[in-house]
Amino acid sequence: MTKPHILQVGPYPEWDQGPLDASFHMHRYFEAVDKAAFLADVGPQIRGIATRGELGANAAMIAACPQWEVNSVYGVGYDAVDLEAARARGIRVTNTPDVLTNDVADLGVAMMLVQSRGMIGAEAWVRDGSWAAKGLYPLQRRVWGKRAGVLGLGRIGFEVAKRLTGFDLEIAYSDVGPKEYAKGWEYIADPVALAARSDFLFVTLAASAATRHIVGSEVIAALGPSGMLINISRASNIDEDALLAALEDGTLGSAALDVFEGEPKLNPRFLALPNVLVQPHHASGTYETRQAMGKLVRDNLTAHFAGQPLLTQVA
Ligand code: 8YV
Image 1 (cartoon, rainbow, N blue to C red):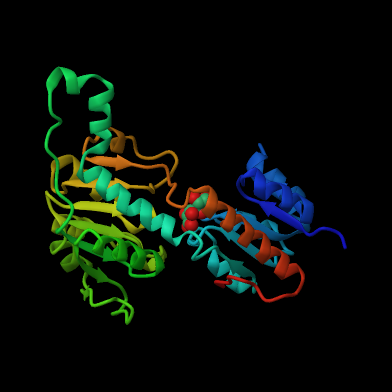
Image 2: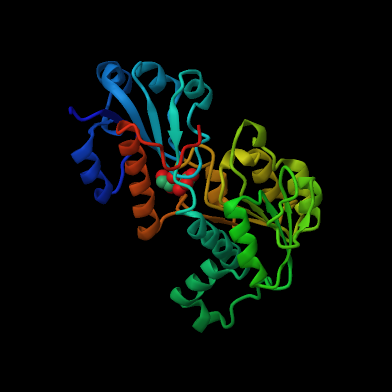
């Protein structure tokens, strides 16, 4: 059987590329200089798209691939895939849930600790000789015993909340409705009210058109001058202009962010702010997790072309 032609939107680690090239005819969109010409050339043969959470598959790609059957996302978030176009054409879409949940939750909690305790500055304080020259490092903010809000108590939100109980934090959450697995954590339907009763607000909900800017100026102001916003979901869940303005004028105390609009070309205003911890969208970035994500991408593609049920289908 001829190997199915796959449009590869972005790079994958070598341990994935080898097996993919062995099983499929991979067309590397990310290496193409003239992307439109590349799509016009290879598009007619493409039966599958292999992409990443933050890259997705846009309308131009989809329009160029008349034989497109399946879209396999390396990531749990598939908000960057044009789902409407996929559904209209009966395209099957898969993602990589569960295998990354704990790593993403770990990084979210770590970001809260690093930012609250000023560990980036403390590291520099030692390395640049300030400790010897200036003495003790300035005092920071306590974490344990404070109040945490979790916006989106799905798989990742649940694991974040579970970890926060280990720090004796008082947990409350918002979601479309109360969750039976919420271990007695307080359900607060309104994100503004959740922010108002929180010292730390974690944004963990799956991004969609419905959640766009769910964290806007009202939520940010409610979190307040001593509050911290932590985002390990998608930048689109937050009104970034409102966030930047609030961080610059002190309406919001601080933020710890792993995702940005237009990433990796984030707004340079973030880089000028001392009260923001910036991270390069690596919440799922461990060898163990990425190997599991890569295997799921391959297994879903293999299952599709073998006429088998998909492992992790979302559409
Ligand atoms: C990326 C993510 O997929 O899971 C998601 O939705 O955004 C990430 O895990 C990962 O960074 C690889 O691109």
